[in-house]
Image 1 (spheres, helix red, strand yellow):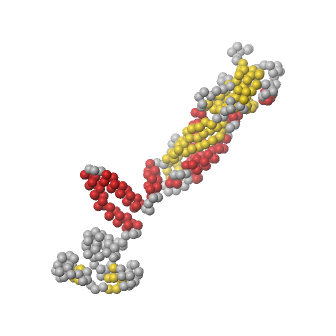
Image 2 (tube, rainbow, N blue to C red):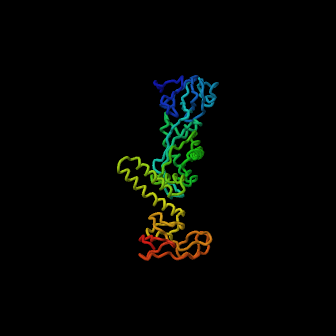
Image 3 (cartoon, rainbow, N blue to C red):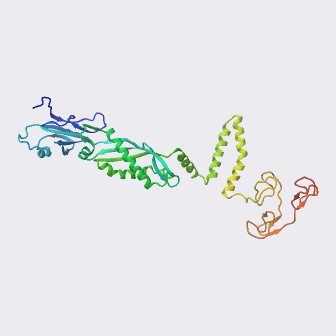
Length: 371
């Protein structure tokens, strides 16, 4: 029985009003009666694929096409009807949007595990954007679109994002040794990952035109470690980094005009010599631990005659006969040149308090009385 609602298609064309459709079927309700001699209009950014009896026959490029056996060779293949070429052809046409679809988002829904050579197993988050383009319309419709009358970017974005994240995790494990090397490598990682994904996208008739990484984010504690390591690149070691932070704190306190700020600045100022001394000690530039002031116990240099901390006059019992440097008491060899130490006269002893003073001293360094 004939259907009174059948519409014979004479002009077949499609406009993407939303700008998000990748494929669109005409007629939308299924196959339709396409009149012999109908006009098929395909834009520069489109391609049209004919389907007859559920089979895709050919893709038509841009232009205005008259559906006859003379202009469309595919019609010759499928029109073997006993009543000739005067009756309508029941078929459908899928239009595919061949433009580039930009700014599609990809990212890790949950953090992915990464084995860092320095930090061990950590979890990373990554986000970015990518662009796609249909390059094989027939393959795309057969593998992805199926029988849907419309297919949009949102229908495929989530799936492609999951493919990117899967490949990203594998690629990062093979190419990256530690997250400390991440700064400045986003572009190289993006290009390498894009090449890995080319085969995955081509299976669906798609091309990954560009892929960008916006961020690769480790946990907060790892971010802090990266920041500290970056600062250490400017300084020789951790001690100098601490000195910089202390100086920044003093500068901040000095800018505070209140009494509390001034007191804090003074307190830090008194602490700075000890901090620098401790830093020098750790870097090996300080004096030997065995040389200490007998009064306050602070370290002193070999050549010092007075303690730089309390001003106490130091006793020197010996002197190197080769280089002339002052030696610690009872030293048998000079720590500078290795020469055997020569004995020096014993120090002068105060008759009043019994304290020992440098040889030739006139007044006692302890009680101030004349020796």
